[in-house]
Structure formats: structure tokens, C-alpha cells
Image 1 (cartoon, helix red, strand yellow):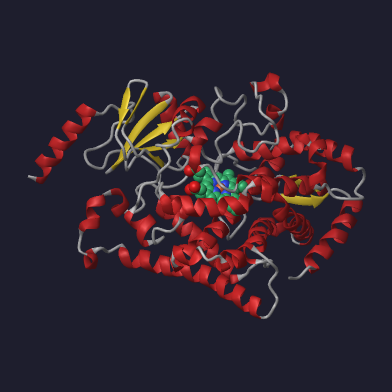
Image 2: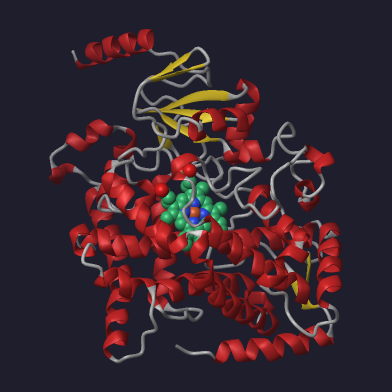
Length: 499
Ligand code: HEM
């Protein structure tokens, strides 16, 4: 009876709605076993090339429509953002693991809006002067780390990105190998793994969620993960309160946020997740982009010469470092930053946006609840969208004759989709852009990056999400003795700053 009822509903549903074509799946499981568990970009690109601007897949109870061109992403996720901006509520990843409080996967609604508003006040461009001194200090520390321990460059990137966000949010600098940061990266990796399509049966077959709680075998694992992540966030809040009591805490976002009379209304878990989401989203993203730019510098060094020529022209011979105030004179570095976001987007198949109202588009009819994602890897690496798409080519953002780019090179969002789209677009994109810009300007000014002989970097298969070891081998050396002296002078001072 159950099967018959299911077949009947499916029949009625397919009469009422019409989806773009896609690869054929198997009954009930759909395309679940076709999609690789990780690094899905190349697979989704190949499918996209076969089906055109959109294709549909089913992962058991979820229907996903992949948008494979900027045109359709713009039409749906941007222009119809009011109805294409929710997230699915996954029983495991959203509820058990995240207590329904992780902003990045919260459904479109009042709770998400309240947190997004709070995040915006701290991350928007008008607040750039709050971030700039920390970006300046931490990028000097970054140079010092590269000089002292070049083989641990990936750890230095990690500390750099994390310490900026921790300084702004918790008024505290971070050291390498801080056990709580290690745990933070572990919990974010667990969360990202849980989000992969098909990773958890209950997020794929919603009916399992109706099993009595004691039969839900995934629940203890999720509850353990939830307790672990809350502990990471709580530890930072406890440490903050201790430092406040001892008068050792400079003004920061968390002190204001916790003192705000509106905050207790959010409840303890949501309050912790609001602070934690900033730590989580702000730490991983910039470090991954930096790793990608380093891979591009070592594997395709042609553009590095142009970048260093521009830097040397403005700064002369290593008497000072590039500053944010030099940005108007360093358009090539802005183009490098932009290309770094486009080149190998780490959210390879985007992030799903859930439609909240039935909709029609170019002959198709979509029901509320359908998941739409921009096929990020596919669009970024499509020749139709980007000339010589696999090449790291900053000039594409400066020379209109290359691919007709008409936006401003300093605008982090235009010309690619790596920060997402519509009302769900990354709230931290200005911070991400400036984090990467200042670090890249200073690193390229002071260091050379080369491939290690016999270990060429496979830039289409780098696991930049890995935080325990280097995602690829690279040789790093200082550009000259004068650059060394400069890094020693500014870096030592930066490392010594304590608060
Ligand atoms: C450095 C490069 C970064 C990249 C490439 C990036 C990328 C993304 C992407 C793809 C999304 C999902 C967008 C969508 O669903 O349409 C997102 C969301 C988000 N990002 Fe970023 N991000 C970066 C940096 C940051 C930083 C530095 C912060 C904070 C300090 C941040 C905070 C957030 C938050 C809070 C969301 C959730 C927005 C929502 O669901 O409404 N991001 N980011």
C-alpha cells in the first residue's frame, strides 16, 4: 500500500511539475550513487556540459536543480531572490548537529534575518576600519611565519585568518597549535562532511526521522558533535568573561553583543552559534583562498612577475610593505585577489538555495522545496564564461578585450559566483576580500613560490580544506636580503604585540 501510494503521488507530481532533464537515476535513491562523496565539481561540470544551462538530479527525497550558467543564476538566485533564498532543514546536519542555530543553513525566516542583521553590522564595508589594523598586524606576523618556518606555510595561513576574526570578535590574538582552534577546524570539517549530499541517510530519506528516537542510530553521533561544537564556542566565551573580569579584554564585538539587551532573547545556543558562525566562516575561507593563490603562483609563475613588477614600481626596494592605502595604485594585486576567488571555487557545487513558493521559468514548473544551486566549479571553468578558464590569469579582470569584463576590479562580487548569490550571498565578502588582498600583496612582495622538483601541483585536485598537513608541496624563499631585513623588522614587532 505504501509503495502504491508513493507511486501515485509521484505520478501526480510529475504531471503537475516539469524539471530540466538530467542523468537517469534508480528508483527511490535517484542519482545518489552517481555523485562522488567529495570533490564533486568535476562530476557536476561533466554533467552540466551534457545537459546545458540546467540539469536536475534526485537524491532520494531531495530534488536538486543545478544552474550551469551565469545567465540562469542571475535570473533565479539573484532576480528572484525573495523566493530562492531558503535552506532545507536537514534532520541531522541542521537540527541534531547544529541545534537549528547555524546561520549558514538556517531557513529563510525571522531567526535567520535577525542573525544576518547582526552579522552585517560587524562585517559590512563601513566597518572595514575595525578590521584593517588587525589585518595589518596579522599579515606582518604571517610574513614572519613564512620566513621562520616556510614548510609550515599552511599553518601560518590558518593562524592568520583565524586570528583576525578572533581579534575582532573576541579581542584576542591566536597562536599556532592552539588546541581550541584545532577543535574548531575539526568541528567545521565534521559539519562540512555532514552537508555533502547523501552523507547522512536521514537527511536523504526524511521518513527515517519519524522513527522513535531510540531507534535513530545516527542521533548519538550528532549529539556528540553538537556538544563538541558548543564546547568550542563556550570555551571562547568563558575565556572572554575571564579576561573582562581581569581588565585584559580590549573592546570587541562579543563584549558589545553579550551586553546588548536584545541578545538574551536569542537563547544561549543561538547566541553561542552567532559568535561561533563568525569564527567558523571567517577562518577557513580566507586560508583556503590563500592556499589556492600560492598554488597558482608556484605552478603558473608568469603572472607573478607582472604582480611583482607592479609592487616594486610602487614600493621601491624593500623599504616598506604595501599598505591598504596603496590599493588604488595596485590594481594588478586586486585582479590577483579576484582571480583567486574565481579560479578553483572551493564550494565546488555551490550551496543549495531552497525555493519557498512554486515557480515557473522558461517552460519549467518548479515546486516549493526544490533545491537550486549554482554549479560553481562548472561556471568558473567554462570556456563560455571565462577565456582560458583553467589558467590563473589576473589580466582577465583588467583588460576588457579578454572576456569583456566591465565591472570594477576592486569589487569582490562581480564576474564570478564564489561568494554565492542573492539574499544568501556571503555576509563576510568584504572581510574575505581585504584579508586576501593585504596578505597576497605582502607575500608576493617579499617571497618567491616555486614547485618542488618532481612534485608538480595538481591544481585541479587540491584538498585545500585539509588543515593538518600541506595540501601540496611548495618551495618558498625570500626575494632578497633587503626583503629579509624588512620582514625581520616588521614581523618581529608584530609577533611581540600582545593583548
Ligand atoms: C574569503 C573568502 C570567502 C568565500 C569564498 C566565502 C564564500 C561563501 C559562500 C559561497 C557562502 C554561501 C552563499 C550562498 O549560499 O549563496 C557564504 C556564506 C557565508 N559567509 Fe562567506 N566566504 C568567504 C569569507 C567569509 C568571511 C571572512 C566571513 C566572516 C567573517 C564569512 C561569513 C559568511 C556567513 C556568515 C555566511 C552565511 C550567509 C547566510 O547564510 O545568509 N565568509 N560564504
